[in-house]
Image (cartoon, rainbow, N blue to C red; front, top):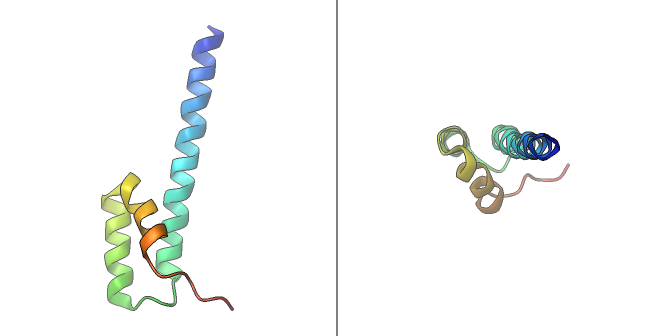
Length: 68
């Protein structure tokens, strides 16, 4: 019983982290000032349709947002 609860908690936390990274990458792609509108659209489509791989790929490959 306790083991099942820990397993469920682990997967809920893992899912929350994955969703958070995905959401952060999506918002970052939309707000990234270093990307033109075409590249923003490309990255948003990649993040949306390649879910788990697309978000980390964007965070690693895409140009960083410019600092204000």
